[in-house]
Structures are given as C-alpha cells and as structure tokens.
Image (cartoon, rainbow, N blue to C red; front, side, top):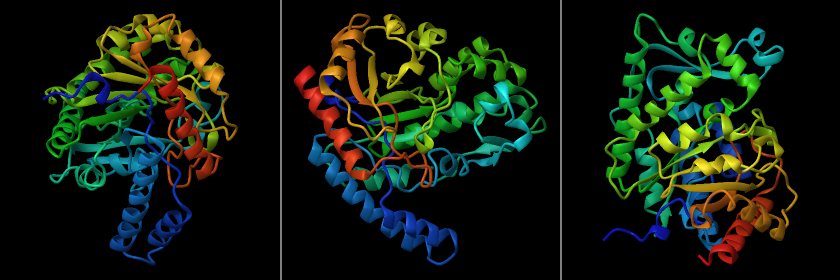
Length: 374
C-alpha cells in the first residue's frame, strides 16, 4: 500500500544531510590519510559514529535519517572520484583572482576519458548500512550530476572522449540513472541531489563567469533541467527525489547570492522532482515571491534555520517567515529545515558545536509540529 503523502519525503521537519563529524572520526580519517590505519579500521569507526548519529536523530523527532555523510571526505569529491574517467582537481590560483573569477569554487571535475560507474555502485553499500539501522526513512544525499560540468565547462571535458557534448550529457545522465535505480533496488525511498550550480545561476557574478566559459546561463539552465530529469527517469513511484540548491556552506561561509527569480519558473515547473530545498537563512537568497511558480504536488523545504550561525533562531520569527512564504504558495506544500548541511566536508565543518547542531534540528522539529501538527 502506498504511503500517505505526509509519510514520504520531504518531511515537515527535514534536514539537508551532512552532520558535524565527531572528533574521533576526524582523528581516524587523519590517521588513515597518513597511512597509519587500514580502511577497515576507519570504516569501523564510521560505523560506530553513524549508529550514534541515527540514534540521536530519531530521539529529536526527525523522520528522514541521514548517515551524516560520515563516510565522505567531501560531499562531492568521494562520489565523483569513483566515476572512471573523472577526477576532481583544484582550479589554478590564476583562475581565482577578482570579479567573476573570484566567485568560482576552488575545485572542478576534469573528464579525461569515457565515464563509467563502478559495477558495485557508488553509494549502494553505504546506503544499505544506513537502511539497516532505522525503521524510519533512510535519507541519502549525493552530488547533482551538474557538478561534473559547471565548474569547468567544455574546456574540462576531453574532446577525444566526448567530441559532441550531447554524448557527454547522455553518458552522465545514464550513469546517475543507473545509481538511482540501484539505490531504489536497495530500498532507498528518499534521495536528494545536492546542487550548487543552479543556485549559482541566480547570482549575476556567477552568471558572468558562466559566460566567460563560453556558456549561455539561460541555455545552461535548460540543459541542467534535462540532465536531472534524465538522471531520475524510471524511478519507482514511491521513491521521493529532492533537489537542494546550495549557495556555499563550508567553514560557515557562502558564495552565491541573488533571488531565485532567474531560474524559478522553468526550474520548478519543468524539473520532475518531488521537492526543492531552498536556502532562505539570510537576505542573499531574496524574497519568497519566486515560490508562486511552484506547481501543486511539489514541496518546498524552507531553509530558514542557519547551519552556519551558532545563535539559536527565534521560534516566533521563523513562524512569521513561514507565514510570509505561504502568501505565495499553499502552506501544505511547505516544509522546514536548516538552509544547508552542517559539514560539507570532514575539514570544512561550520563554526558551531554538535550540541548546537542537535538543538537547531530539534527546533526544526518543534516548529514543524506547531505549524503543521505533524
């Protein structure tokens, strides 16, 4: 029997996914990087920390349970580096100077040959472990397929392997689609794509950087919508997929700014996902008016609680902001979460404590109960 609408992700009280790593996990990863311990020893510590994270997430009332991305050094690198033909490299310092160039992230994917997904999958085994720890909904977050294109564009993709960019996007979509369907077979019913690039297309400086790479920002939006739709095609009807538009998060810092108006109509109405996680923790994200384009049946998760700022939000102020959003979209299509995860990488944690992280997620649950009664 299908789950009732309120039992599917996204949930009224939700989270983006990454959690602050415990000190002992950071220490063990450092030891592994120095060649002092085995991969098995590191994984054992990861297992322990994930079990503890699942327990406390359940205790504060979350329904979508994350592994905190504890098995990853970075939310993008570990996933993308498992794709044959691809590696993540730092952008040369000369490309991070001033103006639009300064806004570019410090890493990009370089596609040196035909792309291929490992036969065993990328996150399938990791998801299976999480799935076995909770009777609630195990939520998995993976980088969006757009992460393999935006930062480098045509110049970062081998012309020998992909003389035609249509073939590149077709292979990329097929690769991600195989992972999505394998995760569904493993029991995943809540999957999230983390995407910085769609949010960057809202930023005038970032759009200028896109043009410097020889791309049309508006045409690129359409390309990315098709890429994501192709990547999730054929998923089972009970698998919820969401898209998180990230504006930069590591070390409590941000990158992109600008309201969602530049992408909202086409993104909301043409992308076949079940919901969007939108960052609305400060003025850089603009107002709620772009939510008028959201079609019925699609959820918007308002990122009103800051994962970067240690100060606790005022509950009544958050409720007022939810009310303000509900002037543009029905309240029953809204949910609440922090604006982003708490640790984009092992060493890129936000400047807050684990106790504050727990308190903020508990506040999300408390507000959601009072607003929606769920």
